[in-house]
Image (cartoon, rainbow, N blue to C red; front, side):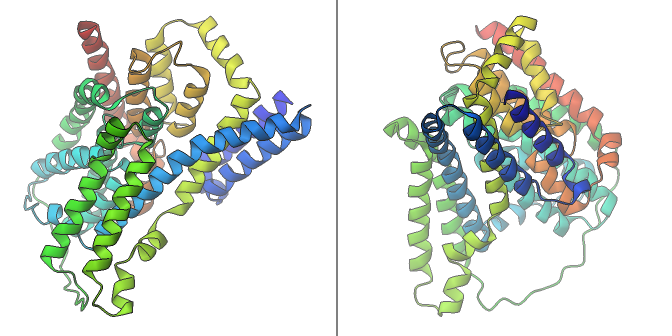
Length: 426
């Protein structure tokens, strides 16, 4: 049974990694892998009641992550529907390519820390299409966005799904992860920016602006209210968790409820058609539910490996082969450029206990950095990279030739900074 389960998992991952070749959405493959794995585990298990209990236990922890993501994504969609992000994009007047690359990189870095790297990538690349007409320039800028979004997402609990997973799992806490990963993460961005911005010369040419008439356009006051409320709701989640000791998804759902009420009252006197375009119902339709299902499928896939005891044996094998934590975590970071970082972190959480590595220990913090930023090395190594790949049609070969070396140097430089920093702090 063990070999069959491992085979199902590896085959599922292989198909996910070549999604664009097999022409099948990775979410479908992830769901099939998770469902098939648990089915095989149940059929070959001597006690199916225990298997059901294990499945229910895993479902509870996975649901916390999914509801958190659902609430956060809905808030972002509501802000976007009210043109809230225009408050940021309208202030970018820079036309020099080198200076603009630094502006875009830093904006993406800090925005990703507040929101998440996937949403930030989509927002900023959409903005780039309004700022830059040249396709080749946009490819370089989009690559900078991917690196910046992943780096920015690594140093806050909400910036990356894997960091959120570690936060919810109790492996890291808010203030230490911000303090200890900020400098490694900013170095991870600055090193590639130095190299990539040097290749950019001259000024950008903006696309011809087409004025669109929107009879339902929100006022600047409404835009500001929704933007500030949405951002505040996202930022206050760590504060809520610290004050109440309740799971983060409760905080994000409360924030969504507040923003929902505000937007309902804001458009209460308008026609039903207009109200609907700015409603939560419409925002939910725009959410990438396929991504949520992918996370569910992949986390359930890791769960059956854990319940079958496979990850425990793998942990023992890793500890036997090497006791150097730095090499272990760096390997996981580089591996995350090939395999999605969500299952890697989920597997690490299952393999290593809090008794072995307590909360906010070197291992968990370094894992948060490595898994969050290592995905930038290859274009399909992160959700941000996959989003950019689809929006700008970035090819694997182009990214490998033009960007990978810079991203790898940034990843290793940030890792070196964290190791040195940890040595002096501890």
